[in-house]
Image 1 (tube, rainbow, N blue to C red):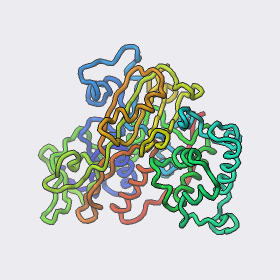
Image 2 (cartoon, rainbow, N blue to C red):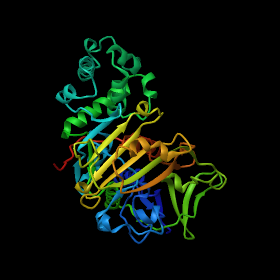
Image 3 (cartoon, rainbow, N blue to C red):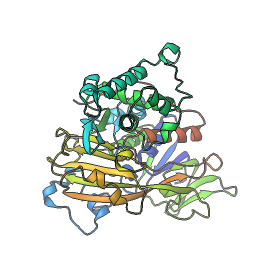
Image 4 (spheres, helix red, strand yellow):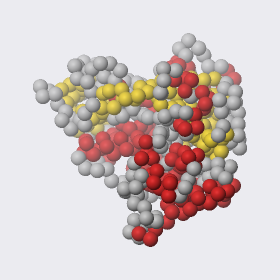
Length: 454
């Protein structure tokens, strides 16, 4: 291993694989290493009983074989991190820009639902659905219609469309009040459409919320049913596809490589990585927090990452669709925090054999939220209670880490842990952020379409 590289990437999670793919396309010489013998890291999709670490029962229940009634092991690809792709969102742009879509097939997610007053309701995707929706009374529907017409009609350079509001100065609270929207409607708009995890956005300028609602409605309009698409065979296909892209452009991959040490010079600047007694030199290193002392006090006396919270996730196997969702074969349900007296929303993501991720007549629902107490499993109870009888359940609590420095001083660039959001927008924000710091210029993407199976 005596070659020198431009960049070494540690960990094959989605963020790292997107970055190594994009850097390889840019002409950088990239070496990508992972301590596991499979791709995906935290964003892998697991089957039930592969012989190595990459399987669900070994990960969660080391001494137990999966029950026979769950069907064939090879039919499963269960996501460890439940996220969907927003059809018009940033991940779609990267998939299309890099042509990684050629390795993947996508299918729509059948429905987007919100929990309100003890019931599950579909998030309206058209004006007709909004008129029929049980989420609002007659007068509130009129007010909401005016609000959405205002958003759709907004033109930055035409003050006649602004109704006296300034999206860059006025808070979202001011906008809601202007249209007289009820708290329950605000909940549904802010959490089920703008996809905020909490209510901090309400007191901030309205522009980002406007952008998020337009993203949601344009994604909804693209394929109907829901704003989300999902890759056949699970999310673990995404990092593998970006890894293939990197390899095509000369990237080198090494799996099953223990990383012994991050090597730095006398000034603390990165010079290389030692694995199995050999040191590989490179100008820069990018990696997930687990390679830089996450979970321990420091790495060689240097505190590189800090814990900023925890996410609890429950992977549940069901033998039926979720009650009250029109027998949808896939869906998202958002439980806004105000509905269950919490600070953070609870998310439910469900997929099934339609997406080639489990056996026929099995449904995989994953309930997740940001941990707020010392009893995380109790916190997701409102979500678990909506699922009906649960055949089997795997609960995990994962710390969220972020880097203590920008990496520009020492050439060590650390990605963020995967958060509790139900989509990939924050992952792509991290990709853009790390790219800008590593390369020194913003990442620019072209716009094209992505094909989706009916």
